[in-house]
Amino acid sequence: MAIESNVTASGNFWQIPQQWWRKKIVPVIANLKFAIVLVLIIAVLSITGTVIEQGETPGFYQTNYPEHPALFGFLTWKVIQVIGLDHVYRTWWYLGLLVLFGISLMTCTFTTQLPMLKSARKWKFYDNPKFFQRLALSAEIDDRDLTDLTEQLETQKYKIFTEGDKLYARKGLIGKIGPIVVHIGMILTLLGGVWGAMTGFIGQEMIPSGDTFQVKNILDAGPLARNQIPKDWSVKVNRFWIDYTPAGTIDQFYSDLSVVDNSTQKELDRQTIYVNKPLKYQGVYYYQTDWSISGVKIRLNNSPIFRLPMAQIGQGAQNRLWGTWIPTKPDLSEGVSLLAKDLQGTMLVYDTKGQLVSSVRAGNSIEVNGVTLKILELIGGTGLQIKADPGIPIVYLGFGLLMLGVIMSYFSHSQIWAVTKDGKLYLGGRTNRAQVVFERETIELIERLQNAGTGEVTGDVEVPTAVS
Image 1 (spheres, rainbow, N blue to C red):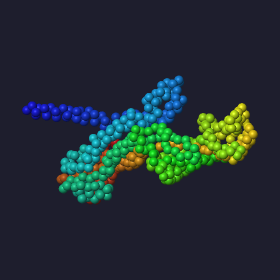
Image 2: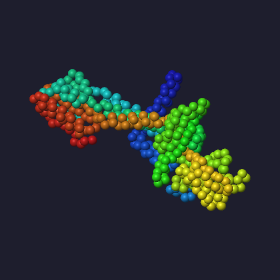
Image 3: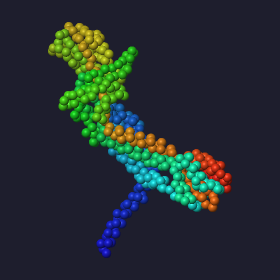
Image 4: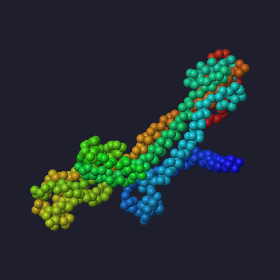
């Protein structure tokens, strides 16, 4: 007896949390208002991640979001980095909200949508004429049988079930499946977003023309992104160039890139990229986003060719300058400064006192400090953003199912019941949407039944007083 009591007590102990979960937690999670609140919170946070630059260096936020004065009185670089507003889409609280929203959708699907679909697939015949008075639309017709009604319903694409003198017909069951497909699409979209945030990365590189590189400068990466970062292959910048308009402004910039196997140095792929046309290889995208002047090739008199790096001086798209210092004596006691603002080839030469000496184009020579300085070539550098997001295919699939589900949801699920009793045909029906269309179709159906014989409608056709 004691053992039975313990078993019973143990069973009740485990039943209480399950009952509490089903009665208290599940209804809240599956509630539409709860889901809407989650969507609004996620939308606000997504806007924040769009307005605040993501994945920049700490110095960028210190410059653009200083403590004095703080933006809106509170938004400083410290707040941004502590809360994680510099990488919103990878923070635990943003991903947690996505997971919670996905759980809400799944709970609603299993507790509401699937039972509704299961109920819609079942049918029940009715033989009591009083039932038809409770339907949205009903009528009584003399001297008609189910054969006449079946013929009319078949022309309207109804699926018909009969049992003796009773009939049930339906169409548009796909409209009941639509909301479920919508939920599946949304869940897949959320799953793709979370998976991409966990396994993807964003990097940025500035590579001189002619150099080969691997991704090193990772700006933002998920905790599982290690396998996505290229290790067995590199990318070579064969050439970088800019097309200019007649007015001298930039029209487009291009990078000729090759994917190279690290072990064999074999070229695996080669593409020319430009803005909005990236290189894609093994799920990693290389986007053309920026440019620079990385160096200059020169010769002094008959010396070997020197390649000198050029450093950026100005900031901003309109004020950027690149410069380098060229020694004209072996002991480095004298030299000139070389400045350039674009890759069109014109450079300015300044002496040690800051006085303009001359201007020179690539391929030409000038005399400075008793030596012949020849500018052979300006070397451009391409600014690439490197991105991998394994969740994108899942997101695309989710969006596809979402759109398909929305289209399916526009189909109305219409039902019609009928029974013949005491020489009369009792007919009624209802639908879940497009009420006016259903009323018009049903009234036309009744009129065709009347016109098919000598029967007359003995009762008024009852329609709802308000259309929902």
